[in-house]
Length: 221
Image (cartoon, rainbow, N blue to C red; front, side, top):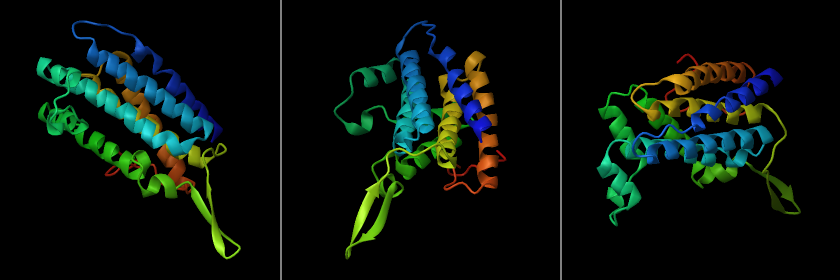
C-alpha cells in the first residue's frame, strides 16, 4: 500500500508543468486551467493527510474550473458571459454547458467526465446526506445517542479510495484543455488513467470501505 501512496504522490508532483502559461490570445482559459490544477493538487494533499471529508467538494471545484475554462475557450460570446454573468441564471456559464460542447465537438470522454462530475456530487461534493453520514458515527449514551464526526483519518485504504477519486477525475480533466491532448497533459491523462486502474485493482482486491468507481466506470476501462 505504501508503494501506491508514493506513486500517487509522484503523480501529483508531475502536475506542476501544467501550471506553465503559454498565453496566445485570451488568457482566461489557461488561467482557469491553472486554478483547476492547483485545486486538484489541494485535493490530493487533503486525501494524503486523511482530511477526506473535504476531498469530494474540492475535487468537484477543480473539475468545474477546467470545464469553465473549456467553455470560455470556445469563443468571445462564452467569454463575455463568464466575464459579465447575465442576470438570467440559465444563461450563465455552467458545467452542463461544457458537457454539451464536449459532446458536440466529438470528445469521446464527455460521458465519463459527466458521470465523474455527478458521482462527486452524489458522494458529498454537495452538502447532502452522504457528506455528513459518511463521517459520522452514532453510539448509545445514557438513553440517548452520541454523535461523533471524524474530520481527519489516519493513512489507510480509506485515504487511497479518495486518492483514487482525485486521480481518476484529474486524469479525465486533461481532455478539456483542448480538442487534442499533447505534451504534459497527454502524459498526465495516460499515466493518471493507468494509476487509477492500478488503485482500483488493489482496492477491489482488499475490500476497500467504499468503491472509488465513478458512475458507469469499471476498472477494466
